[in-house]
Length: 147
Length: 209
Image (cartoon, rainbow over all chains, first blue to last red; front, top):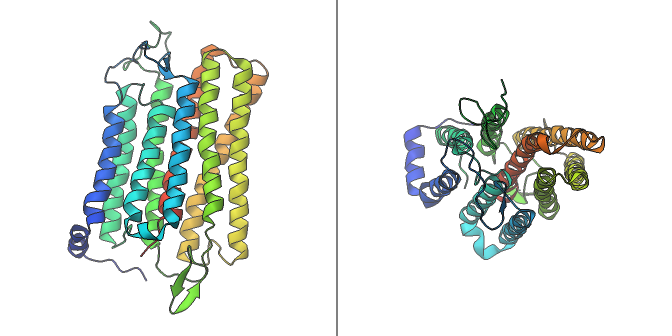
């Protein structure tokens, strides 16, 4: 039966667990920071810079294929790590970082946040930030854990 | 409320951005909370009130509890959905350079990959059901089927919209000036993909200790 526990007790466990204390906020902040920092700041959509691999403000198909290959490799590494017994202790940290990397790559390149207006990034990261708050409050209040 | 563009890429709206695209991003932000709640519920109840079958192989009250997850199979499903994101952006790139044949090919490829993913999910659900896991058999079954079922419903809606776009493209009713339609559906499709990235890691790969 699910027993609600005092926030103070859970907070103590949270502070004593390095995976929670350092890993999760670091990955979450890194992902959100990357999404915001790598999107352009102007109000209007930026005119296409004459940079290599960029056409009309969006990447070329070659860039898309390179990103897809990287995503495929990360997925393969995730599954491989899952089966390596020696890495079970660091499974949470490794999988969270790899998953966040895939999330950021898709958002930046396939969803074009890297090239579109920062307002879109702000809206999306706002939603993600609310999810992070929801996770932190609900999971810590009711004593659940990722580990 | 849409105005003719004053110049390429700049619209005469209060933000200078297309309102439809702004609305789509706002919708996706709200969807983050929707899926965040379902994933949070799964994590909250994970490992509590377990009864066979379990997510992964484990020992329950001194008795071995067989796991239902088939990681190699789900990895292939995840790869299929990931590759559908590639074909989706290739469809967008095709319409932006007015390549109608490329648009049709990549839209159809995206829809077919989506259908492949759904077929894999249907197979997985059937296997789980045969092993005794149902939406009402345990907290694990309830939270798992609600989470992955809602994700599957989102993929199904995406496939229907993609097929609609394909029919429009086939009839020549989707031209370069309407590339934003493809871009908006693409944003929805990629979002469904990133949600699965999170589900695959948190639900399938992470094991409670």
